[in-house]
Image 1 (cartoon, rainbow, N blue to C red):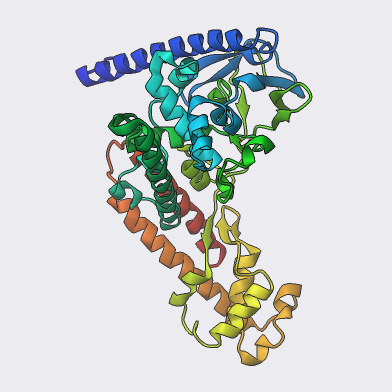
Image 2 (cartoon, one colour):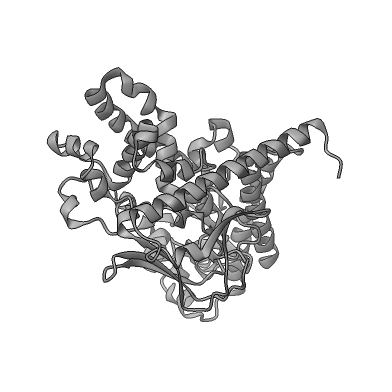
Amino acid sequence: MKWGRAGRRRKRRKDRQKCQEADACAELRKWMVARSSKRELAHTFNLMPFFFPDTGRGLKTKRIIKSAAVIVSIPQCLLVTPSVVLNSQVGSLLKRWKVSFTPHQLLALFLIVERNKSINSEWQPFITSLPSEYTLPHYFSADEINLLPLHVSLVAQRMIQRSQLAHKQVLQFCCSHWGEDADGWSSWERFRWAWCTVSSRAIFFETEEEGKQFVDLDFKDENNVALSPYLDLLNHTSAARVDAGFNRQNKMYEIITHDNYQPHEQVFISYGPHDNATLFLHYGFTLPHNIHNSVCFSVDDFGILPDYYRSTERKLAELRKNGLHRELSCTMDGVSWNFMSAMKILALDWEQLQKSERVLTGEHLPPEVLLSARRMVRKLVSHALAKLRALLAQLPQEVLTAHGNIAHSLVSDDILILTVALQDVS
């Protein structure tokens, strides 16, 4: 293969990155052994860091792994938990001045403080092993956010606003205790990195009782988090079958696989049955051919339907009573039962509405009701499709950036699903 000058530069840059990541992983392993022991890390170190062409950095096994085997076992002393933060130097300040942050904020604050210490931080090998940036929404420009499907961009904007508020609170605390020096190491760019590290790499770890009096637990999505070195190198696939959790008997965070692996194969875990929108919003990536993808509608979308405003309140009450205002979705299997049933309710006239339970029981409905329901589905799906195609046309047709690739993937996923749904009701 012949490389152009730009191609050679990219290749050298990638090679340097791989070497740096390999060095960081080697230092991380030494540090983990020094803080715990080889015996405690025996299961974990059967997995070796490796750069895979399709998934990037990950972990491959050195030996055969059989179902029900422990593949990762991380001692509690290596976990960064809210209690670790509260028992640190910065934690003593928080407690003294009665400043209360969410567990997510605490971990992000801890990361920027320890990162600023550089080689003087006892956590430096772990921090060095982390990515320098992410492809979560927080790294997207406003223009790039607007290229995402609407349902994704709205959530992304809320997530960014929440993290900016969290940063404002942390920055105020840092500046009040470290003065102007804190402006640099607790800037938005540094905090964004730390916030996204926690967002994309945190494990579930129940917030310890001893720390609950010092933390803000009002944001449920930000509770019960901890960071674990090495474990974050494992990549996700929806097909992986694992059990994960903290073993209180041996004080280890363990992952048990129910899959089999041969030597040198990449070992995967599952983050859960997530669609690509969720994977992007929380982890910064999408998967090709994700079986969990769906496109959801809400009652707010119904305004474009003909005759929708006739008996609207009565019909919406009927939808809510029967739970048909939720899970109005389309998948690669077509239109969901909830979606179609909601349309049937909307298609009923006033007299028929008195017997709306016939929709739920699957009893025969007049042909005109079924035809009207299908027309309404087509109207909603076609309207959404037109918006998505317009969005796709705004994306560059040539080489895309990492952010552009994600936007293209999300928009294309939704277009494919809605095209299938349209065929389902035609």
